Length: 258
Ligand code: SF4
Image 1 (cartoon, rainbow, N blue to C red):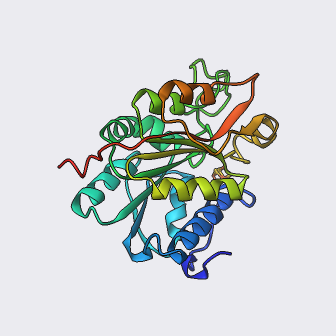
Image 2 (cartoon, rainbow, N blue to C red):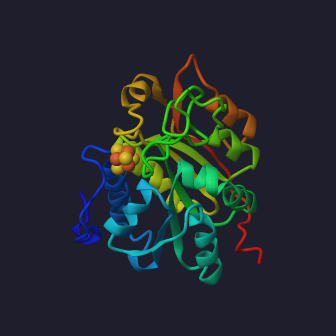
Image 3 (tube, rainbow, N blue to C red):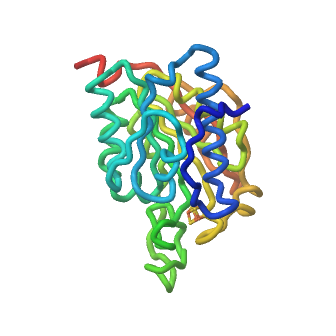
C-alpha cells in the first residue's frame, strides 16, 4: 500500500514502462512501512540524487530531498550526515553517476563506513544523454560513443564493495518490487554504509529485461558476515546472476568516530 503523502504533483517524465517506476514504487512502499512501524520518521529522512534518469526520482518524493551535481550524490550525503547525524540519509545514483563521475566518492564513503544508504540505478548506459557506454556496459556494447562496440571490460561494483569491506552489500532487480522493497528496508535500517546495486534495464537505449529475467536468481535471506562466504554467494553461477543481500557486518561508522 503506497502512502499517498509521498506522492508529489510533479509530472513523471520517465519513458512509459521504464523500470525506474518500479524503483519509485518499491522505495515509497519501503518508507511507508518503516514509518508506519515507527522505525523511522519521515521528517528525519533526506533523499539525494545525482544527475541522470535516476535523478528525477527525488522530484516524485514528497520528503526532504536534494539534487546534487553529476557524480556528487555521495559527498552531498556525507555532508548532510556529518552536519546532522540524527538524519537518515538515502541517496540515489546511476551507474554513470556513481561508477564514472562519482567513483572516488563511492570508494571513500564505503571504506569509511559513512552511515548513508546508496541505491544505484544500474542500467549499464548513460540514458539521459541518449545512450553512451558506462563502466558497467558490457564489452562490445554499441552506443553513441562506441558505434563499433565498447572495447572496455565492465567492472563489477559488488566485488569492489567487498574489497573495501563495505558493511552492507546487496543487489536487486527493479522488476521485482517486493524484493527491492525488502532490500531497501534492510539497507535503510543498517547502521553504516549500505550499498544496493539495482539492475534497472533502460527500455529505450539498452533493453536488457529479457536477458536479466532469464539469469537472475535470489540467494537465501541470511547475508554473510565473512568475506569468503560472501564471495561464494556473489560468484557467478553458470552464467546466472545472484541477487539479494550478500554481506552485512557491524563496525564503527565514520560519524561515530568523529
Ligand atoms: Fe528509463 Fe531509459 Fe527512458 Fe531513462 S531513457 S527514462 S532509463 S527507459
